[in-house]
Image 1 (cartoon, one colour):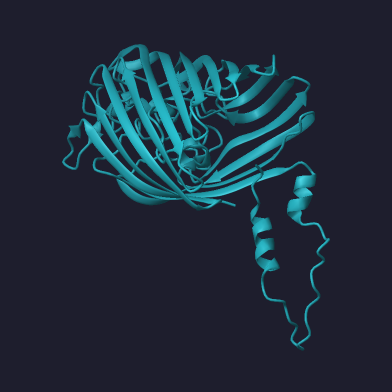
Image 2: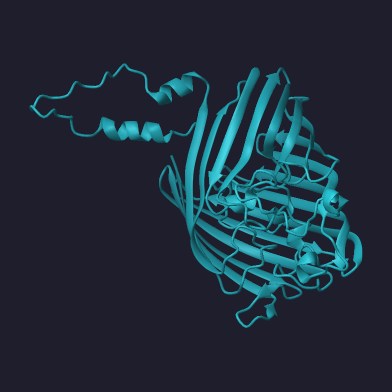
Length: 418
């Protein structure tokens, strides 16, 4: 359903405001009711728009591990996470395009290497503006091609807050690509089956870090109007950090190479670094149990070659995980979303303590989240959330500098859509 723009909202405000009066007391001319508005012009031109604001308070009883909760790096903070704008024209035939801009604290996390507004190649320092999507589209018959920057097909969650049912992101989300820059071709083989292939720069790279490319393959199958499955594979080389004589704890911190956040020690191969083949196999299954209840399962398996496993030691890093979601809409105003997940890290690198230090070996982290949503009006939702994380080995920082196995997260979020 098309969202009203801010301009349309202002037009509504003025339409119900008192009649304007000139200084001499005469009434201003009434607006021409038949004059087209900008909203009408956009609609008639086939242009859609979406605008929203996401602001929240999030607190933790321990210091967050950003390899577990990537969007929430501070222990207790109010924040303007996103001011998002999407403008698109995507006809069923011919050329079109889409542009998506996000401003706010989330932008420094989801921005891609090469176009971050503060591109220092350090985690969470991408600035306050991101361009997660910007692409040209051409559609012809059963074929659709896009060229530019677009969301990854892997995963059940999105960088767009309005598309998620929970306030925090899953553990899996932090270990999946956010976006890709390249070309994607989709073919509707049947009314229920779509095959997608593509070539891109890799995980979250507007500018390529290696000379090779990442290949994308996905199959989307709609079994019934209520049940679907998306299976995707991404395979390609990713830049790796140095190990050896210049070793420091941060050099084996997982934010440098096993997640989509580019770390300062993830040197480009041309600057003395190296690369390693990264594969991700992702499957998302969705089914509507009833008209009000939806069940989703997201499963991942990831391998990373040439990963720094310890000082002067490289090898293959492997992790896998599964996340399950149960969403229930009580009525137009109230809903609840439950999420439970587990990520198993076979080498203990991908989910190690994000402050640096030697990985503790194989580790498993689990989390359970409950989110309550209340929408007093159509365009606004207030969310409250409680989340509990637990790891087999300690990975969460405490106030005295030690590590612990458990962390509790609580928060409130408001999302307003124009």
